[in-house]
Structures are given as C-alpha cells and as structure tokens.
Image (cartoon, rainbow, N blue to C red):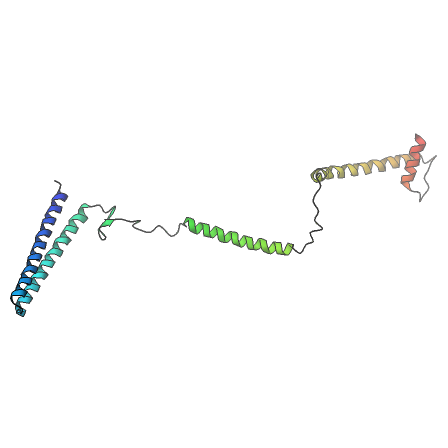
Length: 196
C-alpha cells in the first residue's frame, strides 16, 4: 500500500474508535440517568470536560489529516476548503478583454445610433416631391460616356466651321461679298448652292 492509503486507513480507525467512545459515553449517561434521577453537579462537569477533550482530539486529528492531504495533493484540480474539485477559474478572467456579449451589445448600440440618424435623414428628405424623380432611361450610361467626347467634337466642329466661313468670305470678297447685317448661316448656304 502507498503512504496515502495507509494514512487513510489509520484515520478511519481513529475515527471509528472515537465514535465507539462517544457511543459508550452516551450509553453510560443514559444508564446513569435512569439509575439515579438526580446527579451531582460535579459528575456532570466531569462528563462535559471529557466530551470537550474528545472533540478537541477529533479536531486535532482532522487538522493534521488536512495538512497531510494538502501537502500531498497539488491543488491543481482540488479545493481543500470545499473538499471538492475546483469549479471554474482560480482568478476571474481579465476585465480588459471584452466578452462576446459585450462586443455584440456595443455593435448593436452603434447600429441603433446609425439607424436613428438614417431615420432623421429620411424624414428630412421626405419633404422632396417624388414626382420630380424620374426613372433613368436604359441608355443613360452610354449618353454619359459619349457626352465628353461629343463636347470635344462640337468645339472642333465650331472651329472648323468658322475657318471655312472665313476662307469662303475671304475668297469670295471680290465676287460674292456678304454685306453687313446679313445672316452668315444663310450666306454660307447660298454659297454652297452656288458652288455645287
């Protein structure tokens, strides 16, 4: 047997002896009470002192046993105060690290604040007339892409037309000069008809 087993057996034996002594004392008291209805106060004090001595011996034995068990056991999974396995942590987890529940509450509060802001913005936008908003046509993106290119082409076209008009006006000064106050567009159209 190991030393621990032998200690357990010796403790059990001592406890059994103490129980037997206690039981015998109780039986003796009961018999004495029956034999003599009145006892002397001096005898009662002796019995009380003996009981106290026995209880002190029991306490000393149990304290000694606890010290032996505490020195042998590592207390990694055993709590000597409750005499049971440890439940949970020896120290609480650090308070600096938020738990999943705390993080979820924080996100929920942030989302609620954003929702309130969006509701306020929607209420402000509700004043707009919805009849002014029209759906876009299917080719709106194509027109947007071509608008920049067409602006460049319009400028180039205007420059080219102005150059052509100047050339024709300078070339035709002798024969078909345009008098002041005459519309240039009409004059260009007339010159084109005449040349073709």
